[in-house]
Length: 144
Image (cartoon, rainbow, N blue to C red):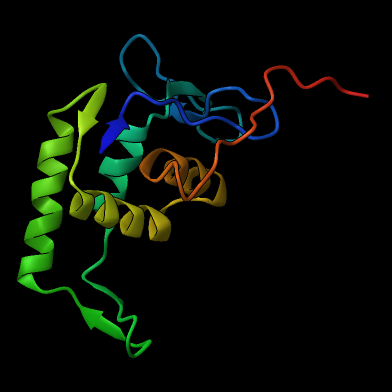
C-alpha cells in the first residue's frame, strides 16, 4: 500500500498545518526566557506523517494492553524488533512509499495509542483510505 510520508497534519478547525513548538534561542544558542523565567516558544517545523510514524514507533513503552485479556503485558523481543525495523525503514524514506499490510497495521496500532484524536483520524485516512473516508479540512475558516 502506498503511504504519503510527506502529508502535513492539519488543524481540523483552521486547516493550517500543525507545527511543533520550539524553544527560542539567542545568538549563543542559549534558551530565551521571559522576566519570570519561563522559556519563550515559537512555531517550529510542520508535523508530517513521517514524523508521527517515527514518534509513535519510538514512544512505545515496554508494556501494552493485551487485547485478549485486557491486562498489561510486556512486549516480546520479536515485537520490539518488528517495531525497530519499521522505525529504521521509515526514517530512511520520504514521499510516497510502499508498505505491506503488516507494516500498515502496526502503524495504525502504535499511532492509535500515541496520537491525539486529530492526528489519529488523519493518520487513519492515510493508512486505510477505504475504511476511513476523506476528511473535510477547511481551507479558510471565517469568524462570525
